[in-house]
Length: 287
Length: 251
Image 1: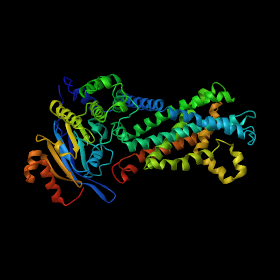
Image 2: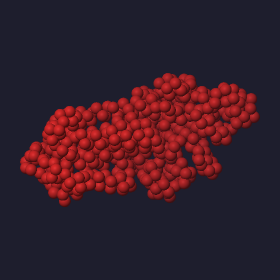
Image 3: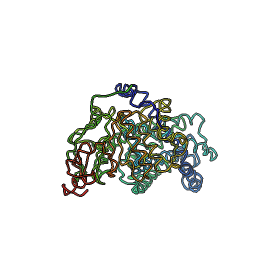
Image 4: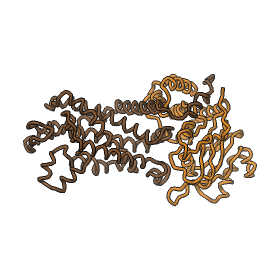
Protein backbone atom coordinates (compact mmCIF):
# COMPACT_ATOMS: atom_id res chain seq x y z
CA UNK A 1 0.00 0.00 0.00
CA UNK A 2 2.93 2.29 -0.44
CA UNK A 3 5.49 3.23 -3.03
CA UNK A 4 2.92 4.64 -5.43
CA UNK A 5 3.82 7.71 -7.41
CA UNK A 6 2.59 11.07 -6.19
CA UNK A 7 -0.88 11.68 -7.60
CA UNK A 8 -0.76 15.45 -7.83
CA UNK A 9 1.29 15.45 -10.99
CA UNK A 10 2.13 18.15 -13.44
CA UNK A 11 0.51 16.21 -16.29
CA UNK A 12 -2.90 16.21 -14.63
CA UNK A 13 -2.62 19.87 -13.72
CA UNK A 14 -1.49 20.70 -17.24
CA UNK A 15 -4.62 19.00 -18.64
CA UNK A 16 -6.82 21.07 -16.34
CA UNK A 17 -5.16 24.31 -17.35
CA UNK A 18 -5.71 23.52 -21.04
CA UNK A 19 -9.40 22.91 -20.37
CA UNK A 20 -11.74 20.26 -21.72
CA UNK A 21 -10.91 18.85 -25.13
CA UNK A 22 -13.27 17.13 -27.62
CA UNK A 23 -11.66 13.76 -26.85
CA UNK A 24 -12.67 14.10 -23.19
CA UNK A 25 -16.29 14.64 -24.24
CA UNK A 26 -16.09 11.51 -26.41
CA UNK A 27 -14.60 9.44 -23.57
CA UNK A 28 -17.29 10.64 -21.20
CA UNK A 29 -20.03 9.73 -23.67
CA UNK A 30 -18.41 6.32 -24.20
CA UNK A 31 -18.29 5.69 -20.45
CA UNK A 32 -21.93 6.64 -19.91
CA UNK A 33 -23.08 4.47 -22.84
CA UNK A 34 -20.98 1.54 -21.60
CA UNK A 35 -22.46 1.79 -18.12
CA UNK A 36 -26.02 1.92 -19.48
CA UNK A 37 -25.32 -1.15 -21.63
CA UNK A 38 -23.83 -3.04 -18.67
CA UNK A 39 -26.80 -2.20 -16.49
CA UNK A 40 -29.15 -3.35 -19.22
CA UNK A 41 -27.30 -6.65 -19.60
CA UNK A 42 -27.35 -7.23 -15.85
CA UNK A 43 -31.03 -6.42 -15.49
CA UNK A 44 -32.36 -9.29 -17.59
CA UNK A 45 -35.90 -8.96 -16.27
CA UNK A 46 -35.98 -5.39 -17.57
CA UNK A 47 -34.84 -6.60 -20.98
CA UNK A 48 -37.36 -9.45 -21.11
CA UNK A 49 -40.30 -7.31 -20.02
CA UNK A 50 -39.35 -4.62 -22.55
CA UNK A 51 -39.60 -7.26 -25.25
CA UNK A 52 -42.58 -9.24 -23.97
CA UNK A 53 -44.79 -6.16 -23.64
CA UNK A 54 -45.02 -5.31 -27.36
CA UNK A 55 -45.08 -8.99 -28.32
CA UNK A 56 -48.15 -9.51 -26.15
CA UNK A 57 -49.84 -6.65 -27.96
CA UNK A 58 -48.83 -8.10 -31.29
CA UNK A 59 -49.70 -11.72 -30.58
CA UNK A 60 -52.89 -11.28 -28.56
CA UNK A 61 -54.35 -7.80 -28.93
CA UNK A 62 -53.71 -7.54 -32.65
CA UNK A 63 -55.08 -11.04 -33.28
CA UNK A 64 -58.23 -10.21 -31.33
CA UNK A 65 -58.86 -6.91 -33.05
CA UNK A 66 -57.89 -8.06 -36.51
CA UNK A 67 -61.46 -8.40 -37.65
CA UNK A 68 -62.91 -5.55 -35.59
CA UNK A 69 -60.78 -2.70 -36.86
CA UNK A 70 -60.73 -2.34 -40.62
CA UNK A 71 -57.67 -0.66 -42.11
CA UNK A 72 -58.11 0.95 -45.50
CA UNK A 73 -55.24 1.64 -47.87
CA UNK A 74 -53.39 4.56 -46.32
CA UNK A 75 -49.85 5.80 -46.93
CA UNK A 76 -47.21 4.46 -46.68
CA UNK A 77 -49.00 1.17 -47.40
CA UNK A 78 -49.89 0.43 -51.03
CA UNK A 79 -52.30 -2.38 -50.40
CA UNK A 80 -54.66 -3.69 -47.74
CA UNK A 81 -52.64 -4.80 -44.75
CA UNK A 82 -53.37 -7.04 -41.76
CA UNK A 83 -53.91 -5.21 -38.49
CA UNK A 84 -50.64 -6.62 -37.10
CA UNK A 85 -48.73 -4.79 -39.84
CA UNK A 86 -50.52 -1.56 -38.95
CA UNK A 87 -49.74 -1.61 -35.24
CA UNK A 88 -46.12 -2.84 -35.52
CA UNK A 89 -44.62 0.71 -35.89
CA UNK A 90 -46.72 1.85 -32.93
CA UNK A 91 -45.36 -1.01 -30.86
CA UNK A 92 -41.81 -0.06 -31.86
CA UNK A 93 -42.58 3.49 -30.69
CA UNK A 94 -44.00 1.96 -27.52
CA UNK A 95 -40.63 0.31 -26.85
CA UNK A 96 -38.97 3.73 -27.19
CA UNK A 97 -41.58 5.31 -24.93
CA UNK A 98 -41.14 2.72 -22.18
CA UNK A 99 -37.36 2.90 -22.42
CA UNK A 100 -37.56 6.69 -22.13
CA UNK A 101 -39.68 6.34 -19.02
CA UNK A 102 -37.40 3.59 -17.71
CA UNK A 103 -34.44 5.96 -18.04
CA UNK A 104 -36.47 8.59 -16.23
CA UNK A 105 -37.19 6.09 -13.46
CA UNK A 106 -33.51 5.19 -13.16
CA UNK A 107 -32.61 8.91 -12.96
CA UNK A 108 -35.03 9.35 -10.05
CA UNK A 109 -33.69 6.16 -8.47
CA UNK A 110 -30.09 7.36 -8.94
CA UNK A 111 -31.00 10.67 -7.35
CA UNK A 112 -32.56 8.99 -4.33
CA UNK A 113 -29.68 6.55 -3.99
CA UNK A 114 -27.11 9.32 -4.38
CA UNK A 115 -25.37 8.07 -7.52
CA UNK A 116 -26.75 11.03 -9.46
CA UNK A 117 -24.27 13.14 -7.50
CA UNK A 118 -21.42 11.21 -9.04
CA UNK A 119 -22.60 12.17 -12.51
CA UNK A 120 -23.26 15.78 -11.57
CA UNK A 121 -19.81 16.45 -10.10
CA UNK A 122 -18.15 15.60 -13.41
CA UNK A 123 -16.28 18.63 -14.79
CA UNK A 124 -18.07 18.27 -18.10
CA UNK A 125 -20.99 20.65 -18.64
CA UNK A 126 -24.32 19.53 -17.30
CA UNK A 127 -26.11 19.83 -20.64
CA UNK A 128 -23.56 17.43 -22.09
CA UNK A 129 -23.97 14.92 -19.25
CA UNK A 130 -27.74 14.92 -19.70
CA UNK A 131 -27.40 14.55 -23.46
CA UNK A 132 -24.94 11.68 -23.01
CA UNK A 133 -27.34 9.97 -20.61
CA UNK A 134 -30.10 10.45 -23.16
CA UNK A 135 -28.04 9.03 -26.03
CA UNK A 136 -27.07 6.01 -23.92
CA UNK A 137 -30.74 5.24 -23.23
CA UNK A 138 -31.64 5.66 -26.91
CA UNK A 139 -28.93 3.23 -28.04
CA UNK A 140 -30.35 0.60 -25.68
CA UNK A 141 -33.89 1.23 -26.91
CA UNK A 142 -32.84 0.98 -30.57
CA UNK A 143 -31.30 -2.45 -29.91
CA UNK A 144 -34.57 -3.52 -28.26
CA UNK A 145 -36.57 -2.19 -31.21
CA UNK A 146 -34.50 -4.20 -33.69
CA UNK A 147 -34.87 -7.39 -31.62
CA UNK A 148 -38.63 -6.82 -31.63
CA UNK A 149 -38.69 -6.24 -35.39
CA UNK A 150 -36.68 -9.45 -35.91
CA UNK A 151 -39.20 -11.47 -33.88
CA UNK A 152 -42.14 -9.65 -35.53
CA UNK A 153 -40.98 -11.07 -38.87
CA UNK A 154 -42.68 -14.31 -37.79
CA UNK A 155 -46.00 -12.41 -37.56
CA UNK A 156 -45.61 -11.41 -41.20
CA UNK A 157 -44.38 -7.93 -40.37
CA UNK A 158 -42.13 -7.92 -43.41
CA UNK A 159 -41.07 -4.44 -44.46
CA UNK A 160 -38.55 -4.20 -47.30
CA UNK A 161 -35.06 -5.15 -46.20
CA UNK A 162 -33.70 -1.64 -46.72
CA UNK A 163 -36.54 -0.42 -44.51
CA UNK A 164 -34.62 -1.84 -41.57
CA UNK A 165 -31.81 0.57 -42.38
CA UNK A 166 -33.95 3.58 -43.26
CA UNK A 167 -35.85 3.25 -39.97
CA UNK A 168 -32.66 3.79 -37.96
CA UNK A 169 -32.62 7.63 -38.06
CA UNK A 170 -36.35 7.66 -37.26
CA UNK A 171 -35.76 5.40 -34.25
CA UNK A 172 -32.93 7.66 -33.10
CA UNK A 173 -34.95 10.88 -33.46
CA UNK A 174 -38.11 9.46 -31.87
CA UNK A 175 -36.05 7.80 -29.12
CA UNK A 176 -34.26 11.05 -28.33
CA UNK A 177 -37.55 12.94 -28.13
CA UNK A 178 -39.20 10.37 -25.83
CA UNK A 179 -36.01 10.04 -23.76
CA UNK A 180 -35.85 13.82 -23.37
CA UNK A 181 -39.45 13.73 -22.14
CA UNK A 182 -38.29 11.18 -19.56
CA UNK A 183 -35.49 13.52 -18.47
CA UNK A 184 -37.94 16.37 -17.99
CA UNK A 185 -40.22 14.15 -15.92
CA UNK A 186 -37.31 12.92 -13.81
CA UNK A 187 -36.41 16.51 -12.92
CA UNK A 188 -40.00 17.18 -11.87
CA UNK A 189 -40.68 13.99 -9.93
CA UNK A 190 -39.76 14.42 -6.29
CA UNK A 191 -39.80 10.80 -5.20
CA UNK A 192 -39.67 7.35 -6.67
CA UNK A 193 -43.18 6.57 -5.39
CA UNK A 194 -44.60 9.25 -7.67
CA UNK A 195 -43.52 7.28 -10.69
CA UNK A 196 -46.84 5.39 -10.74
CA UNK A 197 -48.40 8.72 -11.67
CA UNK A 198 -46.20 8.83 -14.76
CA UNK A 199 -47.71 5.54 -15.89
CA UNK A 200 -51.24 6.83 -15.46
CA UNK A 201 -50.83 10.37 -16.69
CA UNK A 202 -48.12 10.09 -19.32
CA UNK A 203 -47.56 6.63 -20.80
CA UNK A 204 -51.15 5.42 -21.14
CA UNK A 205 -52.67 8.69 -22.46
CA UNK A 206 -49.78 9.17 -24.88
CA UNK A 207 -50.08 5.65 -26.20
CA UNK A 208 -53.85 5.45 -26.52
CA UNK A 209 -54.40 8.99 -27.81
CA UNK A 210 -52.17 8.37 -30.79
CA UNK A 211 -52.07 6.71 -34.17
CA UNK A 212 -50.29 3.67 -32.72
CA UNK A 213 -53.33 1.41 -32.45
CA UNK A 214 -55.79 2.90 -34.94
CA UNK A 215 -55.58 5.22 -37.94
CA UNK A 216 -56.59 8.75 -37.02
CA UNK A 217 -59.38 8.87 -39.60
CA UNK A 218 -61.11 6.26 -37.43
CA UNK A 219 -60.71 8.54 -34.43
CA UNK A 220 -61.99 11.53 -36.42
CA UNK A 221 -65.24 9.68 -37.12
CA UNK A 222 -65.69 9.04 -33.41
CA UNK A 223 -64.66 12.44 -31.96
CA UNK A 224 -63.20 15.51 -33.61
CA UNK A 225 -61.78 16.75 -30.28
CA UNK A 226 -60.01 13.47 -29.65
CA UNK A 227 -58.72 13.56 -33.21
CA UNK A 228 -57.00 16.91 -32.61
CA UNK A 229 -55.59 15.70 -29.31
CA UNK A 230 -54.12 12.72 -31.18
CA UNK A 231 -52.76 15.04 -33.87
CA UNK A 232 -51.08 17.24 -31.26
CA UNK A 233 -49.62 14.23 -29.42
CA UNK A 234 -45.89 13.96 -30.20
CA UNK A 235 -46.15 10.19 -29.78
CA UNK A 236 -48.45 10.07 -32.87
CA UNK A 237 -45.74 11.81 -34.85
CA UNK A 238 -43.04 9.51 -33.47
CA UNK A 239 -45.17 6.55 -34.60
CA UNK A 240 -45.81 7.97 -38.07
CA UNK A 241 -42.13 8.87 -38.49
CA UNK A 242 -41.22 5.24 -37.77
CA UNK A 243 -44.08 3.87 -39.91
CA UNK A 244 -43.01 5.81 -43.01
CA UNK A 245 -39.29 5.23 -42.43
CA UNK A 246 -39.87 1.48 -42.18
CA UNK A 247 -41.04 1.64 -45.80
CA UNK A 248 -38.24 3.94 -46.96
CA UNK A 249 -40.27 7.16 -46.85
CA UNK A 250 -39.96 10.34 -44.83
CA UNK A 251 -42.95 11.94 -43.14
CA UNK A 252 -41.52 15.45 -43.01
CA UNK A 253 -44.32 16.87 -40.87
CA UNK A 254 -43.74 14.23 -38.21
CA UNK A 255 -39.97 14.68 -38.44
CA UNK A 256 -40.41 18.42 -37.83
CA UNK A 257 -42.83 17.96 -34.94
CA UNK A 258 -40.63 15.33 -33.27
CA UNK A 259 -37.54 17.56 -33.65
CA UNK A 260 -39.39 20.56 -32.20
CA UNK A 261 -40.57 18.55 -29.19
CA UNK A 262 -37.04 17.15 -28.73
CA UNK A 263 -35.59 20.66 -28.53
CA UNK A 264 -38.31 21.83 -26.18
CA UNK A 265 -37.90 18.85 -23.84
CA UNK A 266 -34.10 19.25 -23.80
CA UNK A 267 -34.35 22.92 -22.84
CA UNK A 268 -36.76 22.00 -20.04
CA UNK A 269 -34.51 19.13 -18.85
CA UNK A 270 -31.40 21.32 -18.71
CA UNK A 271 -33.45 23.92 -16.83
CA UNK A 272 -34.77 21.26 -14.44
CA UNK A 273 -31.25 20.03 -13.63
CA UNK A 274 -29.69 23.48 -13.35
CA UNK A 275 -28.65 23.94 -9.72
CA UNK A 276 -29.35 27.67 -9.80
CA UNK A 277 -32.71 27.86 -11.45
CA UNK A 278 -34.26 24.42 -11.65
CA UNK A 279 -36.33 22.32 -9.37
CA UNK A 280 -33.38 20.75 -7.57
CA UNK A 281 -32.65 24.14 -6.00
CA UNK A 282 -36.24 24.53 -4.84
CA UNK A 283 -36.55 21.14 -3.16
CA UNK A 284 -36.90 21.24 0.59
CA UNK A 285 -33.37 20.33 1.54
CA UNK A 286 -30.47 18.04 0.91
CA UNK A 287 -31.35 14.96 -1.09
CA UNK B 1 7.79 16.25 -9.15
CA UNK B 2 4.92 17.76 -7.23
CA UNK B 3 2.72 20.59 -8.33
CA UNK B 4 2.35 23.21 -5.59
CA UNK B 5 -0.27 25.83 -6.40
CA UNK B 6 -0.15 29.21 -4.73
CA UNK B 7 -3.95 29.65 -4.45
CA UNK B 8 -5.87 28.29 -1.45
CA UNK B 9 -7.09 24.79 -2.21
CA UNK B 10 -10.56 25.76 -1.09
CA UNK B 11 -11.88 29.17 -0.21
CA UNK B 12 -15.40 29.57 1.21
CA UNK B 13 -16.30 33.21 1.82
CA UNK B 14 -19.48 34.51 3.41
CA UNK B 15 -21.64 31.66 2.10
CA UNK B 16 -25.30 31.49 3.09
CA UNK B 17 -27.94 29.07 1.82
CA UNK B 18 -31.62 28.60 2.61
CA UNK B 19 -34.29 26.05 1.73
CA UNK B 20 -37.38 28.20 1.62
CA UNK B 21 -37.61 29.91 5.00
CA UNK B 22 -35.14 27.50 6.63
CA UNK B 23 -31.61 28.86 6.69
CA UNK B 24 -29.17 25.95 6.34
CA UNK B 25 -25.94 27.96 6.20
CA UNK B 26 -25.31 31.43 7.57
CA UNK B 27 -22.25 33.44 6.48
CA UNK B 28 -19.91 30.48 6.46
CA UNK B 29 -16.28 31.25 5.70
CA UNK B 30 -12.96 29.37 5.90
CA UNK B 31 -9.99 28.41 3.74
CA UNK B 32 -7.92 25.26 3.19
CA UNK B 33 -4.32 25.25 2.01
CA UNK B 34 -2.69 22.41 0.08
CA UNK B 35 -1.69 19.69 2.51
CA UNK B 36 -4.26 20.72 5.15
CA UNK B 37 -6.28 17.99 6.85
CA UNK B 38 -9.36 19.77 8.17
CA UNK B 39 -12.20 18.13 10.02
CA UNK B 40 -15.60 19.74 9.53
CA UNK B 41 -17.21 18.92 12.83
CA UNK B 42 -20.94 19.15 13.32
CA UNK B 43 -23.95 17.26 14.57
CA UNK B 44 -26.49 15.83 12.14
CA UNK B 45 -28.35 18.72 10.52
CA UNK B 46 -25.52 21.20 11.14
CA UNK B 47 -25.30 21.97 7.41
CA UNK B 48 -22.31 19.80 6.44
CA UNK B 49 -23.96 18.07 3.47
CA UNK B 50 -25.46 21.35 2.26
CA UNK B 51 -22.00 22.90 2.34
CA UNK B 52 -20.59 19.95 0.38
CA UNK B 53 -23.40 20.26 -2.17
CA UNK B 54 -22.52 23.94 -2.64
CA UNK B 55 -18.78 23.26 -2.95
CA UNK B 56 -19.43 20.59 -5.60
CA UNK B 57 -21.92 22.72 -7.53
CA UNK B 58 -24.90 20.46 -6.84
CA UNK B 59 -26.61 23.51 -5.36
CA UNK B 60 -26.15 26.98 -6.75
CA UNK B 61 -24.07 29.23 -4.54
CA UNK B 62 -26.29 32.31 -4.52
CA UNK B 63 -24.79 34.15 -1.57
CA UNK B 64 -21.06 34.29 -0.94
CA UNK B 65 -18.23 32.84 -2.99
CA UNK B 66 -16.67 29.40 -3.21
CA UNK B 67 -13.47 28.86 -5.17
CA UNK B 68 -11.23 25.86 -5.70
CA UNK B 69 -7.62 26.82 -6.45
CA UNK B 70 -8.91 30.22 -7.54
CA UNK B 71 -11.70 28.89 -9.77
CA UNK B 72 -15.15 30.12 -8.76
CA UNK B 73 -17.52 27.13 -8.62
CA UNK B 74 -20.40 29.20 -10.07
CA UNK B 75 -18.51 30.91 -12.88
CA UNK B 76 -15.86 28.28 -13.72
CA UNK B 77 -17.36 24.96 -12.62
CA UNK B 78 -15.31 22.76 -14.99
CA UNK B 79 -11.77 23.61 -13.79
CA UNK B 80 -13.01 23.69 -10.19
CA UNK B 81 -14.70 20.26 -10.39
CA UNK B 82 -11.73 18.75 -12.24
CA UNK B 83 -9.64 19.40 -9.11
CA UNK B 84 -12.11 17.93 -6.61
CA UNK B 85 -12.42 14.31 -5.49
CA UNK B 86 -15.53 13.44 -3.48
CA UNK B 87 -16.55 10.60 -1.19
CA UNK B 88 -20.27 11.03 -0.65
CA UNK B 89 -22.18 10.27 2.51
CA UNK B 90 -24.37 7.72 0.73
CA UNK B 91 -22.67 4.92 -1.15
CA UNK B 92 -22.70 5.70 -4.86
CA UNK B 93 -21.26 2.45 -6.21
CA UNK B 94 -23.29 0.55 -8.77
CA UNK B 95 -23.60 -2.78 -6.98
CA UNK B 96 -24.29 -4.77 -10.16
CA UNK B 97 -21.02 -3.65 -11.74
CA UNK B 98 -17.55 -4.87 -10.84
CA UNK B 99 -15.18 -2.72 -8.83
CA UNK B 100 -13.16 -2.00 -11.96
CA UNK B 101 -16.26 -1.10 -14.03
CA UNK B 102 -17.33 1.36 -11.36
CA UNK B 103 -13.91 3.01 -11.40
CA UNK B 104 -13.69 3.14 -15.20
CA UNK B 105 -17.10 4.82 -15.25
CA UNK B 106 -15.83 7.51 -12.90
CA UNK B 107 -12.66 7.97 -14.98
CA UNK B 108 -14.75 8.43 -18.11
CA UNK B 109 -16.82 11.12 -16.37
CA UNK B 110 -13.56 13.02 -16.05
CA UNK B 111 -12.68 12.39 -19.69
CA UNK B 112 -9.72 10.14 -18.90
CA UNK B 113 -8.27 7.85 -21.56
CA UNK B 114 -8.85 4.17 -20.83
CA UNK B 115 -5.14 3.33 -20.67
CA UNK B 116 -4.41 6.19 -18.27
CA UNK B 117 -7.45 5.23 -16.19
CA UNK B 118 -6.34 1.58 -16.03
CA UNK B 119 -2.96 2.59 -14.64
CA UNK B 120 -4.48 4.94 -12.04
CA UNK B 121 -7.09 2.34 -11.04
CA UNK B 122 -4.39 -0.27 -10.49
CA UNK B 123 -2.37 2.13 -8.30
CA UNK B 124 -5.28 3.38 -6.20
CA UNK B 125 -6.85 -0.05 -5.67
CA UNK B 126 -3.49 -1.43 -4.62
CA UNK B 127 -3.09 1.43 -2.14
CA UNK B 128 -6.39 0.60 -0.44
CA UNK B 129 -5.52 -3.10 -0.44
CA UNK B 130 -8.17 -4.17 -2.94
CA UNK B 131 -6.13 -4.83 -6.05
CA UNK B 132 -7.12 -8.49 -6.02
CA UNK B 133 -10.85 -7.67 -5.82
CA UNK B 134 -11.04 -5.50 -8.94
CA UNK B 135 -13.11 -8.00 -10.92
CA UNK B 136 -15.56 -8.70 -8.08
CA UNK B 137 -19.00 -7.19 -8.15
CA UNK B 138 -19.34 -4.26 -5.75
CA UNK B 139 -22.21 -6.19 -4.14
CA UNK B 140 -19.73 -8.84 -2.95
CA UNK B 141 -17.70 -6.35 -0.90
CA UNK B 142 -18.22 -5.50 2.77
CA UNK B 143 -19.26 -1.99 3.83
CA UNK B 144 -15.68 -1.09 4.74
CA UNK B 145 -14.32 -2.40 1.45
CA UNK B 146 -16.93 -0.44 -0.52
CA UNK B 147 -15.84 2.71 1.28
CA UNK B 148 -12.22 2.01 0.35
CA UNK B 149 -13.25 1.58 -3.29
CA UNK B 150 -15.06 4.91 -3.11
CA UNK B 151 -11.94 6.55 -1.71
CA UNK B 152 -9.83 5.01 -4.49
CA UNK B 153 -12.41 6.22 -7.02
CA UNK B 154 -12.29 9.78 -5.70
CA UNK B 155 -8.52 9.85 -6.30
CA UNK B 156 -8.34 8.36 -9.81
CA UNK B 157 -8.42 11.68 -11.66
CA UNK B 158 -5.61 13.16 -9.51
CA UNK B 159 -7.65 15.67 -7.50
CA UNK B 160 -5.87 18.29 -5.42
CA UNK B 161 -8.80 18.76 -3.04
CA UNK B 162 -10.56 15.79 -1.44
CA UNK B 163 -13.99 16.12 0.18
CA UNK B 164 -15.31 13.33 2.38
CA UNK B 165 -18.83 13.55 3.77
CA UNK B 166 -19.18 11.36 6.87
CA UNK B 167 -16.99 8.68 5.27
CA UNK B 168 -16.81 6.42 8.34
CA UNK B 169 -20.51 6.20 9.22
CA UNK B 170 -21.49 2.58 9.73
CA UNK B 171 -17.93 1.25 9.56
CA UNK B 172 -16.17 -0.86 12.20
CA UNK B 173 -13.18 0.49 14.17
CA UNK B 174 -10.60 -1.14 11.91
CA UNK B 175 -12.08 0.27 8.70
CA UNK B 176 -12.40 3.71 10.29
CA UNK B 177 -8.78 3.69 11.39
CA UNK B 178 -7.62 2.53 7.95
CA UNK B 179 -9.51 5.28 6.10
CA UNK B 180 -8.34 7.98 8.46
CA UNK B 181 -4.69 6.88 8.33
CA UNK B 182 -4.78 6.55 4.54
CA UNK B 183 -6.19 10.03 4.02
CA UNK B 184 -3.78 11.59 6.53
CA UNK B 185 -0.91 9.98 4.64
CA UNK B 186 -2.17 11.47 1.36
CA UNK B 187 -2.11 14.93 2.95
CA UNK B 188 1.43 14.52 4.15
CA UNK B 189 2.93 12.75 1.15
CA UNK B 190 1.06 14.45 -1.68
CA UNK B 191 -0.04 17.76 -0.17
CA UNK B 192 -3.65 16.86 -0.88
CA UNK B 193 -6.05 19.29 0.83
CA UNK B 194 -8.76 17.37 2.67
CA UNK B 195 -12.08 18.45 4.13
CA UNK B 196 -13.40 15.57 6.26
CA UNK B 197 -16.96 16.08 7.51
CA UNK B 198 -17.95 14.08 10.56
CA UNK B 199 -19.93 14.14 13.77
CA UNK B 200 -17.39 11.81 15.42
CA UNK B 201 -15.15 14.10 17.44
CA UNK B 202 -12.35 11.57 17.92
CA UNK B 203 -11.62 11.71 14.17
CA UNK B 204 -10.05 15.15 14.68
CA UNK B 205 -6.62 14.33 16.10
CA UNK B 206 -4.56 16.88 18.06
CA UNK B 207 -2.48 17.70 14.97
CA UNK B 208 -5.51 18.39 12.76
CA UNK B 209 -7.36 21.58 11.97
CA UNK B 210 -11.07 21.70 12.68
CA UNK B 211 -14.09 23.77 11.76
CA UNK B 212 -16.99 23.55 14.18
CA UNK B 213 -20.26 23.99 12.31
CA UNK B 214 -23.53 24.24 14.21
CA UNK B 215 -26.94 25.47 13.12
CA UNK B 216 -25.40 26.52 9.81
CA UNK B 217 -22.79 28.77 11.42
CA UNK B 218 -19.05 28.38 11.96
CA UNK B 219 -18.43 28.52 15.72
CA UNK B 220 -14.69 27.86 15.63
CA UNK B 221 -12.00 27.38 13.01
CA UNK B 222 -8.33 26.54 13.55
CA UNK B 223 -5.89 23.96 14.88
CA UNK B 224 -7.54 21.61 17.38
CA UNK B 225 -5.34 22.71 20.35
CA UNK B 226 -6.28 26.37 19.72
CA UNK B 227 -9.99 25.54 19.60
CA UNK B 228 -9.70 23.67 22.91
CA UNK B 229 -7.77 26.53 24.49
CA UNK B 230 -10.06 29.31 23.21
CA UNK B 231 -13.19 27.49 24.37
CA UNK B 232 -11.67 26.93 27.78
CA UNK B 233 -12.02 23.14 27.61
CA UNK B 234 -9.65 20.30 28.25
CA UNK B 235 -10.66 18.09 25.34
CA UNK B 236 -12.15 18.78 21.92
CA UNK B 237 -15.39 17.10 23.07
CA UNK B 238 -15.64 19.49 26.03
CA UNK B 239 -14.79 22.47 23.81
CA UNK B 240 -17.39 21.39 21.24
CA UNK B 241 -20.09 21.00 23.91
CA UNK B 242 -19.30 24.43 25.30
CA UNK B 243 -19.37 26.09 21.89
CA UNK B 244 -22.68 24.45 20.98
CA UNK B 245 -24.24 25.22 24.36
CA UNK B 246 -23.24 28.87 23.92
CA UNK B 247 -25.38 29.24 20.79
CA UNK B 248 -28.56 27.98 22.39
CA UNK B 249 -29.40 26.41 19.00
CA UNK B 250 -30.29 22.74 18.64
CA UNK B 251 -29.08 21.12 15.41
